[in-house]
Length: 145
Length: 165
Image 1 (cartoon, one colour):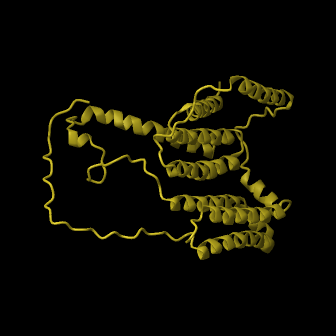
Image 2: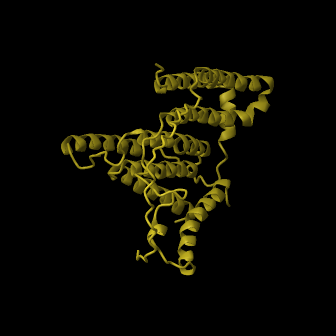
Image 3: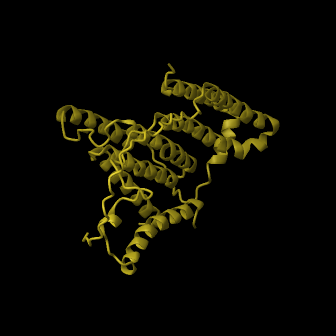
């Protein structure tokens, strides 16, 4: 007997096995000719600069905090959504009051501007007369990994 | 050993190994990342015990929410790579006493509890029963939970808000 969670488990297992398997199988087919440029970390075509572990904007944290509260709200609404029809109008109102209480919080956040995203002020570029330095020529030397 | 047991031991192994990495890793990002596998494994064990709603809540709230918050908290620290986390052994004697007392309490609890040894492979889903209880016996608690979440929301936002000059 396969329960619904059993099916989910098979999905998880497939997902975990599939990725290493594909990477391993691809190793036999793909040509491997690494150069210095190819081995660089891909950063949308730009040359990577500095550490990727930078200090994040505090706004992400506030948004995640608000998300967590509404996450719990949604979780609590699942059992209500399954059963409220058995109780008629009373069951419906219980959920509506619950939602209104949290809607109040949402309105508060909105009014206080916690959902606004502070944009950094753009700094206009300062042009200097000096010509830019010559770019380094790309070297295509073969590397061994 | 049935398939159920194999899956249980798989999740138990996942929890133990990733919890060990969480505690011993010197890199705080690796710690936070391996905590994800610990929480996920606990969710799997909840599901295996027939507490399917609790398992889904664990996945949604802990893996999807609290862990994100933790990783953001880690990323908010100024020098992530240079944080010197002490993972050595200090205060051995107090630690042994504390862990021993806790382990003793857990063991005595384990031995005294009458465990339900019914096979739990074909359990009913619990979400419907929880919903019924929330609308009858615990309806006040349900609304109070809403209030609690509201208080947490406003409190968290006012603490985290940047003071305007």
